[in-house]
Image 1 (cartoon, protein in one colour):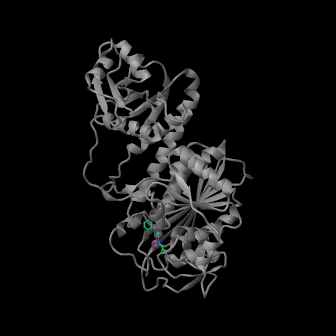
Image 2 (cartoon, protein in one colour):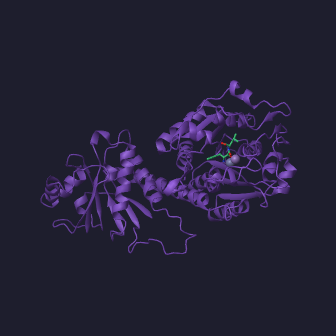
Image 3 (cartoon, rainbow, N blue to C red):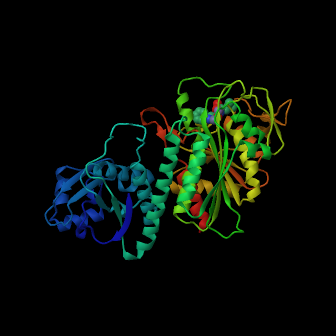
Length: 497
Ligand code: BES
Ligand code: MN
Ligand code: ZN
C-alpha cells in the first residue's frame, strides 16, 4: 500500500472515498461538518435520523452525494470526544479498513488524522494510521493452495490530510515512518508464522542475505557451527546438538552513521523450533513453539525499517539461530557446558535453552563496542503469568536505557513494563557444580532468566525484552503479531534525532 499526505478541504477532494469521523451522540467532526455544508446538510440529516450515532466501530458508506465531487463518503464512528485515546484511534482505523475492503475504492482520502487524540499530535496520528493500515493488510497464505479472499478492486493508496500546508513535510515523514514500521512488523510476522520445517537456522541465514541484498547499507555475515566452535560458543552449540539442522549465528550490519560511532545492537533469540529437548514439552500447543524465533524476527523487521528510513545511525543485529530437539546426541539435564565467556553452566533443564543461545550471542556483541545492546526473546512462560499478552517484560542494567525503551513503547503503542532485578534473585541461579545453573526455580522465572543474561552483559549498557506473551496470538487469530518491531524502530528513530 502507498501512503500520501495532503492539505485541503474535504468537499474539494476528487477521491474515490473521503473518510471522516462522527463523534458519539451524533456530532459531526469538523471535516464531516465541512462536507455537510457542501451537500446541503445531507450528512447531519442522516445522523439526526439515526443512521449513524457515532459509536466506536460504526461505519456508513455513502455513494455519489449531490454537491460533492468524491465518489464515496465513509463515516466512521469515533465514540466520545473526551475519551478519544490511542485505542479509540486504532479502532477507528480498523473500522475504516474493514469498510474500504471490497468497497470498490482503490484509494481513499482520510480525515481521521485531524481528529483530536489525547496527548497525540497530527504527526503521531499519521504515523500510527499508516502503520495500522499496513499491518491490517497482512495475510499469511503462501502455504495455502486456494486463491484466498482477494477483493475485486484492491485498495492501493491512503492519503492522510493535514490541517495546513505547513504540516505537509512532517506529515510525509510520519507516513514514511509508519509505513516502514508496518512493513517491518509484517516481515517479522512472515518469519514467525513460517513453520519449523521451512524456517530453519539455515533459512534465517538466507533471509539475512536477501535482506542485505535489497539495501545498500545492510551487510549480512553468517557464522556456521565450525566458526562458532572456534569462538568457543559452547552454550549455543549445546542447544543445537540434538538437531539435524545446523545452527547459525547471523550478524547484520546497518551502516548509516560515521564509521567510528558506536552501534546500537539488537540480539534476537532464534530458536526455530523449541521441543524442550530432553526436558521435552507436553504436546498440547507445542506447534506454537515455531514462534520461538520471534525475537530474531523482530530484529529482521527492525533492521529493514531502519534501512528503509535510512536512519543516520549504526545498528548491528545478531541472531542466535538453532533448533532445540531431543536426540541421542542432545544435551541432558545435569550436563555442564562452557560458554564463550568461559563461565560454566549446569543445564538443569534443557527447555531453558533461550538463555543458552543468547549468552554466547551477547558475549559476541562485545566486539562491536556497542552504544547499547537490547536482546529480544520469547524467553519464559512466566512472562505470560506476570504480564499476560499485552506488555513486554523489560529488564536491564541501565536505567537510562530502560526508560528510553519504556517511552518508545508508549509512543509506539507497543508497551513494555519493567521487572526488578537484583542479588536476591541472582542467588536462585546457584549451582553446586558449575558457575551457575540455567534455571532459578519456579518463583520469578522471567526475572531469574534476566539475571542469567545479566552475567554476560557487564561490559555494556544492556536491556532485555521478554516477548513470550506478546510475540504471537493463540486461538482462532493464531499468528505472529510483529511486536516489538514498533517499539524497537521507535527507539532507534528517537536515537537518530
Ligand atoms: N520458549 C520457551 C518460553 C515460552 C513458553 C514462550 C511458552 C512462550 C510460551 C522457553 O524456551 C522455555 O521453554 N522456557 C521455560 C523455562 C523454564 C524451563 C525455566 C519455561 O518458561 O517454561
Ligand atoms: Mn524452551
Ligand atoms: Zn524457547
